[in-house]
Amino acid sequence: MSIPVEIRWLEPLYAPLPLPVEVAARVQKALGRADGPLLLMGDMPWLLDLIVDGLQLPIRHLDKRSKDVVSVVAAQENACRYCYGINRAVLRIQGWDEARIRQIEQAVDLADDPQLAAVIAFARALSRSNPRPAGPERARLLGVGFTPVQVAELAFVASVNAIHNRVMTFLAAKPEEAIEAAATSRWGVFARPLLRMMMTPRPGRDYSQEERWTGPYAPLIGLLDGTPGAHVVSHTLRAAFEQGVLSRQTKLLTFAVVARSLGCEACTDEASVALVNEGMSKAEVDRAIATLECSQLPQNEQGVLRWVRGTVRYVPDEIQASTRRLDADLGRAGTLDAIGTAALANGMVRLAMLGV
Amino acid sequence: MTYVVVMLLAAVVALGALLGRNSARLSRTERNLDGAQERLRGLELSFRRFAPPEVVEAVAELGIHATTNRREVTVLFADLKGFTALSETLDPSELVDLLNGWLAAMDGAIAAHHGRVSKFMGDGVLALFGAMHTNPWQARDAVNAALAMRDALTRYNAAHGHLPLAMGVGIHRGEVVAGVMGSERLREFTVIGDVVNTAARVESLTRRFGVDILVTGAVNTALDGSFDVEEMPAAEVKGKADSLVTWAVRGRCAPGPG
Image (cartoon, each protein chain N blue to C red):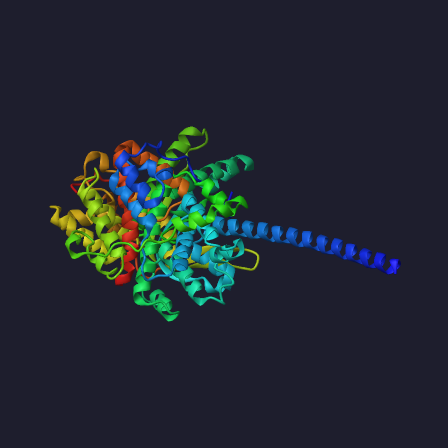
């Protein structure tokens, strides 16, 4: 066991399936690997892209240390066994010793490093979102020397991790014990420089106006102006709403339910307006959000909203069991689409704290 | 000369042995500390099932007094009817089995609907919805839990040969003070406020009206017409200046359009 706590975790939701050759080549080029949990989601291309983009996690203004710390704290808070093991391993590979990692996890003895303490507090608060952090938390980060654009990237990193942690948890991705072991073993010292090189953040693409997503949640893109995260969010929202097998109403209601659960009125309204534009009446939308039932959705998607509600705060093995029940209604493609949409909604509503 | 060299060598060897032993002891102590830290962390995570993580951390760092806040919760109060009479006819061990079986069934129904049992009080149960996390569906959850409790009790009665048990459930919603409370010897995460007392009073009205589930207006307005409810006459209750209007919950309505 390479993580300090036991997280109850079921066997993977699906058997791995080989990726199509051209997809595997693209993923291999981007990440240096095309295996592990990626093989669980190859038949839902937008979800695979979401994970690949997120693993690259492009940042331009934020320091790498803060990015790595946010990732491990988010995985710990979201109790993602897969991500927690990987992100801990990343810190070890970057040269952090076990004692310092424990300090981060327990948020103790950090008086000598107020920036680190502020980053940990922010990552915890945004991951929990009980309630969602807002002005005071942002002010604390600015107070210890982060610039507004760095704060935006911190929120972006925490939000992307909220997405990743959920996808890996709902799929019950098998922990990467070989990487975890390489990070701590004596022999792993030879592999660490290579792993470090693979983990160097990519600068990411600049956001271009031509690619601008103008559909639901487009205002979130503006919160990341000047960062490569804007492109990732734009690209991902477009893919999520234009691809997949679930109805657009189910996807929009997924966003609305997550937004209501996290107390984001602006995000709830954004979904409501989009649903009205799709042809639902405002009263129908309000009722669906209030009751988690909507007879206008396709029969096999009727249970999605009740499952979505459980994706905001959960116990890993319980949400994994509930995802298996969802699979009975939706099948593999539908479940992967639902997992990606719910995870994305959780990330986007957290990101929206930048606009509060 | 030889003697001095031998003595020096002996001293070096003794010092080396001492250092080695201390180093081993230090390593052992570090391992024990790590183990203790891991167990504490595990304990902290376990406690998150009983109180919000923020509360657990605040208790660990600041003590219990820094951990109260105000929040909107829905309180469900359930009580067995006729339990006192039953307790006079049953053997004590049978009575305990009966009660434990009922409490377990109720706990399962409450947990399945995002609630948490705050207290078992003899033959009563106090459950909270929205105390751990903000929950915009808390009123519906509480009513769904009450309906599941009704079904669970029916199954429980069918499976056991004793006199059929009956229960009353009162549900109310409002702002409470939530936090870790108690004495040095016994502390718990719970809520206090008029909402709790009112839920108990509403439960007592179930006997007067001959129904099993009653909710207040604060709960009923949050149900969006998706439950079959019947308004009861206004009733005076102990400790309340104004009479209370309650609604009896019959069941769920069939899903409407949209």
